[in-house]
Image (cartoon, rainbow, N blue to C red; front, side, top):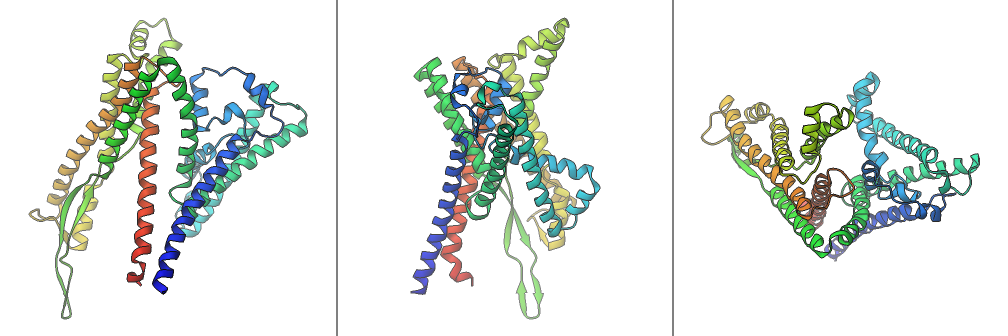
Amino acid sequence: MNDSAERAAGRSSLRHRILVTLLAIVVFRLGQDLPAPHVDARALEAIPKTENPWYWLLDLFTGGGLSTLPVFVFGVLPCLAAAPVLRTLITLVPRLAALRAEGRAGARLLTRYRRRLTVVLGLLGAVGVVVFRDREVFDDHGAVSIAVTVACMTAGTALVLRLTEVITDHGFGNGVRILLLAQVLAVLPAESLRLYEAKGWVAIAVMTVVASSVMVATIVVAQAQRRIPIQHAKRMIGVRTYGGNPTYIPLRIAQANSPAVLAAVLLSLPVLAADLWPSVTWLEWTGSRLRDEGTPWRIVVYVVLVGLFAFIRAAGTLDVEQVSRDLVRTGGFVPGIRPGSWTADYIGYVYHRISFFGAVYAGVIALIPVAGLALLDASPRLPFGGVTLQVVLVFLVSVTLDTSRQINELRLQKSYGQFLR
């Protein structure tokens, strides 16, 4: 009877986490659809959509908030921006660096500062929206009305921050990533409809193949690992023997969008320089060949840069010397390889081969969306359309895998919890 009650409690806990996550997403989407006070929705609909690519980029990462000015106008963008800003401040302010070195107590205080910084960023963003947005979208231009609008948008940022913490603590996955995925997916259907209106069903079929290929390849590579076998020496303590059990070091291919983003930004610099100095001949020649994402020359250079950046990033991730020292300290060794520098050389040899394969994989993944858009001859409003599509798809797979892994771990914990006590 007790076992049945425990299993029911485990299922209830699992259902509770799922319901908390879904409820937080629903509240978040309602906040992104609810207009802020003193905002004229009809005036917003009458304003034509701007084709500025950077405005579209901000609109993508705010879930369409800049177009409709809802209560959650910035979505999770302040939460995303607060973390790197705080890391920069830690390197600049000695007091914050000392807090990071204080352990758990300092981490709690830094978390409090991050929350306050998120609200401050939301406040600054709300003031910027009210100041630089067209006056026609506000039905009242009084100081009190503007203050109420700014306060409501700032409170929306604080509520979004709380929703992310609720998902992280009582739901599944990372709250910021879950809500970011929800708001990005909310923008994509409108862009898919625009692509269908421009190119028809052929575009939908090509995008389906592109999305399926990227997602399947990402899932396969994310689950793959190269296991280096490790054997620990046996130790006699009293009359008992300890250790000697075989284990392994799992080596994986890092899943990251930063090489593709860095390569796209690097390729955009000659184009920007050509626009700033049109009289320079070689800049104009280079910019003309890198301006269009569908040209074979730009695609080849882009894929090579993505692979190069991915290899450099992976090469600096694993410290093989530290792994070798840890093995010596714990009495472990690779069968057939002498401990010390020989083990470090062997692990480095294996890891460099994996990194090379990962660089080729990153280049192929970056090629698929760009080739699909070039085949359709449809460039989205966003520059680096292939990069954006890749980032969204890889991010979708990453969040889904992390959430499903957490769900499976909780189910196993509830199923075998009675045997672990």
